[in-house]
Picture 1 (cartoon, rainbow, N blue to C red):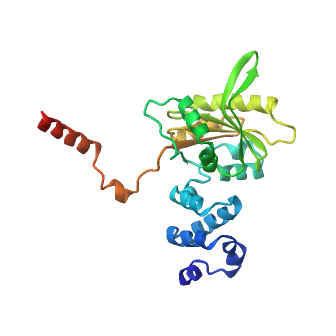
Picture 2: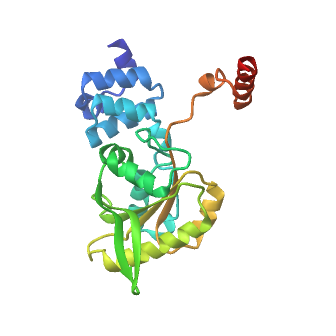
Picture 3: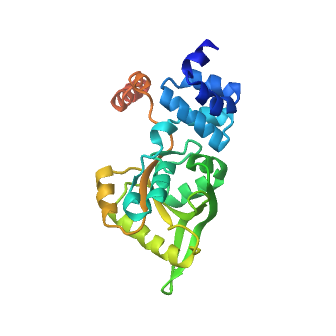
Length: 259
């Protein structure tokens, strides 16, 4: 209780926010989050999203606070101010897909199938408000067939969100493809009361400077973010692990001894 009182000195904030989450959630926040601003953010997000204690722990461990709002985008130039700010806040970089098991040679289709097979975990990582419309969603344009990897509708943004999956590094031409998809989706799918559709390119790696230049000339709202299967190890653990050279040396020594 002393730790609780020290962590939350603002009585008004305690009544408005902290008192609305269970005691177990508060204990978890006190144990796992030291920064008061970050701790308050997790408390507010818990209320807004209805996180259980396990989900809260997962979000803290995945570093959601540091990832939220970091997507490279052109939203400020292509969306109304209120829509732009909300879209930027809702998207993150990187996205963590710890629930997937993919081989080195996996293809984009395998990534998509894995996400759909674990759709509940995928939606949890995307965040509140995403409703799945379909995968490989068909668009007939100019007598040709095109397929969107994943199509969502966001209930708070009130717009379609197209996700294009990439197994490799982001390339400038990826933004041109997404720009085309969004223009078509706005014509073919968008209801008059919907906000402009948003595109999210999820790639294995990206150079943020290249991404910013690629999006600068695009007329449609596009974000670029990375995805990862596991989070990077903390430095204190990483330094205790052998390097790839040390592993190779050990394997070679063992092979020589066996021969």
